Image 1 (tube, helix red, strand yellow):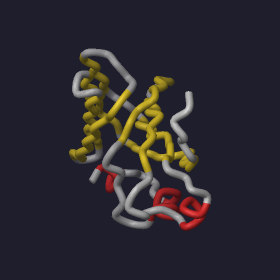
Image 2 (tube, rainbow, N blue to C red):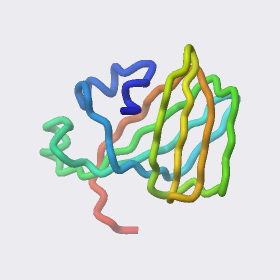
Image 3 (cartoon, helix red, strand yellow):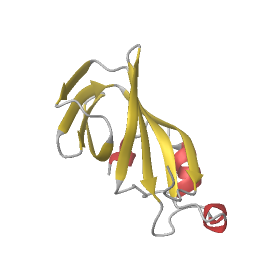
Image 4 (cartoon, rainbow, N blue to C red):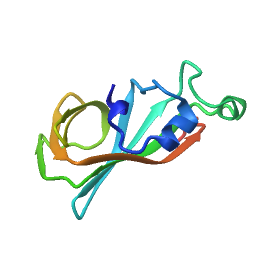
Length: 129
């Protein structure tokens, strides 16, 4: 599970507890700044693995920022940063290898020394545009 590699899990654990990893991730966009990459991700809420407050408010989706910090390498093939995302993270010594596949077409590979999550927000996605 890629969530095992989050460098500071305090906010994630406070909301989801230990062992929860969303399985149907989507990316809306990415921000490259300095030596960090921020992936703006969202996922449907399911399996009641989230706070009662979210259930009571009838939230059905949540978003968060996945921050890949101190990036040393970055390779993008078939550039397209919007859609369903498959995320794999491995740790080799003190460095993480992050592999993301978007829409089964775009492949992103990078190495970094830290992975953080911030801005976790739940909401009701009614499908309106």
